[in-house]
Length: 274
Length: 138
Image (tube, rainbow over all chains, first blue to last red; front, side, top):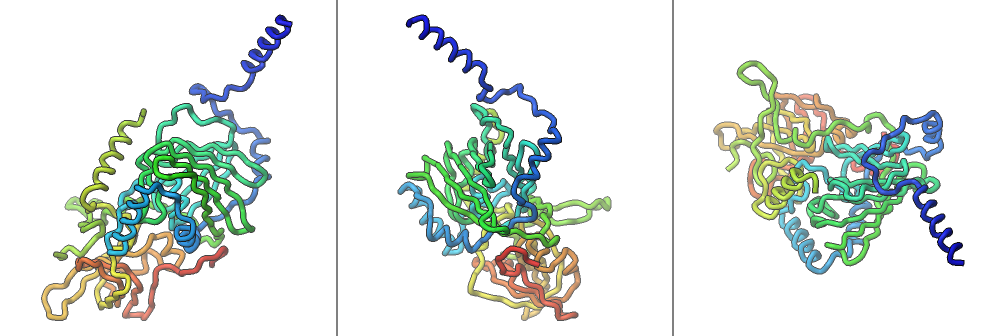
């Protein structure tokens, strides 16, 4: 009996050793896609075109389904709303960092597009040159200790026609924002799970569950909607945020250059302003 | 943390955010403009700055009491959004005479948020954004 138990234990250990390694493998290699990999893409739902945020719905969600802020965070948010109403909006986006996750999905006024390639889904945004999300769908796990970043580390899988995305490794300084002037840094350990799917042929829904224990008393579930546009004038254009801080000029040598613009309280103003 | 440089950058940013208002960042909400106040000026286009995150129309305004023209900045949305509303980077050019309507900055500085601009020579009026929210916009 004891022998059988020991053999069973050894067998289980062998089976466990034979399983694919789930911890991140720093030496892993991305294989070249096969024709079958490309053919599988054709079976995915059609998310082509350009997706524009439904801003009126963002506002409705902000008012009707606010995050379950911790009491001390709710005080900060209340102060931000008051400051915004007084014409002193808190500068959540007054820099050229990416908005980051999940605030990009929550508050953006800009369009994005979605690319499917073998083993990956990529969201390409408009408005900041580095606004993009890489979602790995090749079965890899999260790294054990991902380098924190604005968009975090995202892995996804398809459940029928829904893309399920799990994101960790978001910089603690990245805001969890509900408007361009109300939000707080997530302060670390934020975890975002999304279910992206078509609500109807031309409406993409992102059902988010945001766990941010430093600022929320419980996970926050909310949805954002995006409408499909196919007119070519909706094609994504390059947006380099920092460019807006400069104007074009010609230097003494005849070279085309950028020169800084005078800003006052975050906005460019006429040079003769007091 | 391996990206110590990035984190240090962000710590500096957080410190800045907690202190005085920044004075050199271009991406912002529009709450600093008077939402229910509107100015209309006849002006001459100095520069049409076709940049992200905000396009800026720089105009020269002749003061009613005389004196040197005053420079005003009138901000609006992004090139992408304007393109979808029928604008282009060539919609306005230096020297164009325009009538520009905008919400002014609350602090009295020479800046505003654009409502519309009319080219006096042709009568063409441009407004930022269609205001429509639906799929399949043309």
